[in-house]
Amino acid sequence: MIITTSGRPEKKCFENAERARSALGGSIIQRKKRSVKQLIELYKEPVLVAGTGRYEYYSADSSSPFFFHPNSSAFRIKRMRKGMPDPLIEACGLKKGDAFLDCTAGLCSDAITAACLTENKVTALEINPITAFIISDGLKQWETEDSDLKKAMDNVEIINTHYADFLKSCMDNEFDIIYFDPMFTEEVQSEGISRLRHLADEHDDRLGEAIREAERVARKCIVLKDHFRSERFHLYGFTQLKRPSTKQHYGVIRVDRNMT
Image (cartoon, rainbow, N blue to C red; front, side):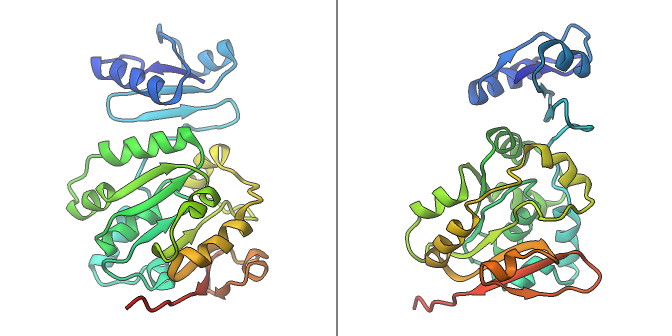
């Protein structure tokens, strides 16, 4: 990977480029008015562009860059303020004060939404170091006048690790709810997912191992989101919550340990 600045860089762009190099490695290349496409063709490597307010990651096999955006969490939080239900919150039975672990952070929409309701620190895991860096920075840098959204983003902690390894390191009953949202077994059209797909681990063979660990670590339940035709629900023992008119279904394994 090479790191460069936006086309007309300010001082902060160079500072952000150096910060990315320190965190991720790679080489900083001067832009010299060249397009990102030209840089990819010249260096035969993906390009991370450091702007003043965000990072954008470009690769040869992606039609659009990957960058942080709160995505659906912004309008989901607005809907919850109006008293409207959120499918993930309902599937989890999430309550204020619950400890929520998002094992597949991605764009962090689910983690942000959960953090808004629980008003507690949410831990979100991301195996790809580039994705983890961009999302972690975006959660801090994103500017919004929505105080609920901002507070929720501040309460999300990104950890760059594989969820199976993280769960093995956890104590028994450490989290109330453990959530998995792996890349679907069948593709669903989504702008956010399409930007993330080339950075995602689409064929993770450790999901079953992680779910077994989650049964030890969870106090209330384990939740899986997947395509409605996915065999994972049956394979791993989830009760599938069928949702009419949507391809995204949730599965739940209830643990419900009384810790009092």
